Amino acid sequence: MKLQPIEEFIYSGFAKRYYQVFNAIPVMVTAFDKAKAVEKAFEGKVPTYPIGLITPVSIDQNIESYATNQLARRGLGSIIDNDSMYSVKLLPALLELEIEYRTLRFSGTDDSVLSYIKRWLFARRIGSLKFNVDYGRLVFPIDVMPSSSNVAIPLRESTVEAETCYKIVTNITLKGYISEAELAQQGIVKKIVVNGVELNSDGSLPGAAFTPFNN
Image 1 (cartoon, rainbow, N blue to C red):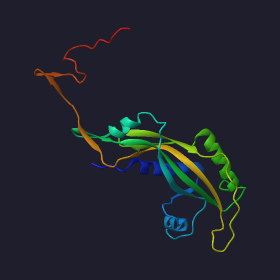
Image 2 (image 1 turned 90 degrees about the vertical axis):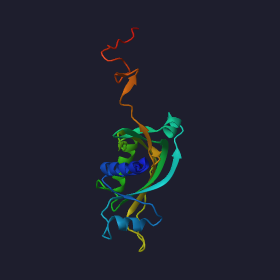
Image 3 (image 1 turned 180 degrees about the vertical axis):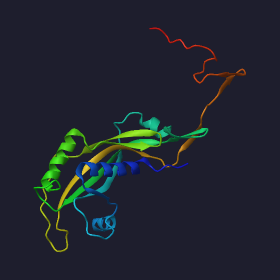
Image 4 (image 1 turned 90 degrees about the horizontal axis):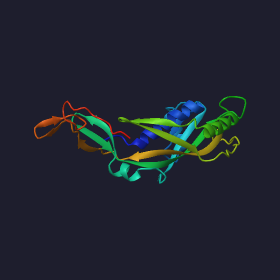
């Protein structure tokens, strides 16, 4: 059995969260030609601003995370199907993104350059870009770390060839995970029988009362 890698859910989850916080249409960019990415996202129509171009930059292992070896070797149970449980092998990772915010206005509106920079700094301070990823039976909190509090104020491009919009470029790091698509399968023990006697699910004899240890 295969499961879509968790990093794809993380990218998608961040795009949705970015839209919720900044009300900018997210466009995932996976090629050098950003203009074609925008054209494809808007199906050839005139783009509706503001736009947030999200470009994956790098993926690195998160060496500060705990239980890294166990997650990578044994994985976590994510799907239960009849008599089997499927576990996914995970590796805590740092996923860096470049965010390019495009707008037509410099000030005076919620989608302006100055308004976006203020909201970006507030989001960085209070952590409002954090989100959760539902992955099988598991839920993973994803921490989001804007790389810098110093956001450059752009000048508007006015050449014939370029789009006449303001472009604010920042970087962000997602403290998330990457995963193997192939799931490991293991059986589920539903019944324990010792000397012909079926034990309870906790391993005790039928009719026996569990007595906790006293301190």
